[in-house]
Structure formats: structure tokens, C-alpha cells
Image 1 (cartoon, rainbow, N blue to C red):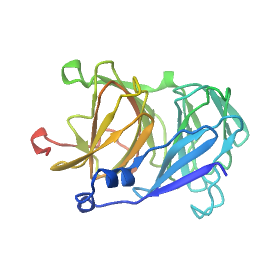
Image 2: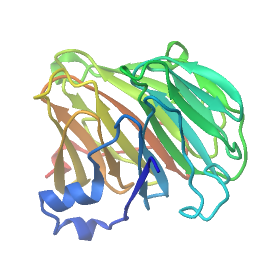
Image 3: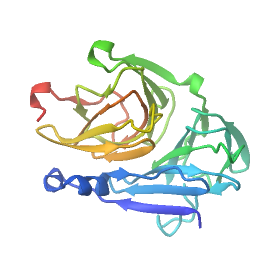
Length: 281
């Protein structure tokens, strides 16, 4: 069996008051995502999101979850978003195959029974980052090429946060049950993301950080209540499950990219509550 599924529990703000660095990492960080020939997934009880990596090598890989979810097949009651950050690969969706080059995305609707992931070259495997959320109806499957993603430029060099946000799965261009997903790229010489910080209590978010400039690059992911912040030090190709009540921002020692994914009861992208800088502690 090539599937490894781990669980992360939901926590209140009072819980993490007492967490040291090791405990914060244990509860919120996914340290391994891409391993050739493996499917490495995390199930977080924050809005029951599943996220992780599918890295086919010599053989195709298919996610087969049934007992874990109480269903007959993975997407019986779920929808799925995919972004490839590795080599060229393919996705076969109920018998229909699509090529996926680096940065291509895909939305797969509830009710699809078989999704098979393959790499064109096992020496340069595709790295499919996936996010799945509960769903109540089927919306059409849709390939999301990087060139067609909605882009937004934010920030500036003076604040070290010049970046481009690419929206892949977004309510302004397609229907989903609740999943939103996109890709943020910081410009060279910039390190801050999402600062000033905000919360969006109506949906949680997961972040997968990657494309670090070198092996020594580190990302400091900041979370927690605005007046009682915590941080987790993140390496390349690691992910954080961030509760809806928590702020989320980060600073890298060099520039980097990250994939964000959200789910909850509101799909409005800019539905957020800004945190004044004087409230951060």
C-alpha cells in the first residue's frame, strides 16, 4: 500500500497557549509531502480538509480511501483540487487522461470514482499537491492551466512583500462546493506574505511552502491569536494547517512560493478581518 494518512486534530486558542515548538510542529506541520512512489496525506479536523502529495514514479498511483471516510470511494462525498509543482505528468479521471506540466492545476468534482496519477519520467517525477474538502453535489471537472489563472499583484519592495497571487479554484470564475485554491509567488528579494495579518473566521486555510532558493532557506510561519502569536519554522515542501481563528503570515530568509487552499462557509476571497499592527504581540 502506497498510501500514508495521518490525522491532525482541531484545537482552541486556549490549547496552543501551552504548546512548545515541538508540540506546535506535531499538531500543525506536515513535514513530508512528496516521496517518489508514495501518497502522503493529512486529514485535519479543521473543516475536514485532506491535503498532501501524490508523487508517482515508475508506476501510476491512485488514492483509494473508503473505510477511513466511511464511503465506497475517495470522492463519493468530496471534491478535489490539484496543482503539479514537479515534472511533467498525467491525470486520468474516470478514463479520460490529461497532461499536467509544472504549475498546471485541476478541479475534480464530487462523484468521480477513479483518479490515476502518473509521471512521464520517473527521474523527474510529477509532484501533485492535492487538497480535498467535503462536497454536497457535483460541479464539472476543469483543467486549470497556469497561463489561465487569475493573477493579482500585491505588496511592494519597501515592505518586502511584492508578490503575485494566482487564483486557480475561485468563486469568481467557477463553481465549487467550498474549495478555493491558488498559488502565490514572491518576487526575488521579498520575504513577507500576508502582512499586515488577518483572520477569516468563516474558513480555514492550509499552506504548502516550496520553491525555496537554496537548502538553507527557512520560512517562519506565524499563527495564533493576534495578541499571543506562535511560529513554526518550515523547510522546503512542507505544509501547515491553519485554524480559522488564527492569523497567518510568514517571513522567509529568501523569496519562495506557496500554495494556499481554503474551505468553509464563505467563498468570497476578500472576506477577511484585518488585524491592526498595534494588536500583534
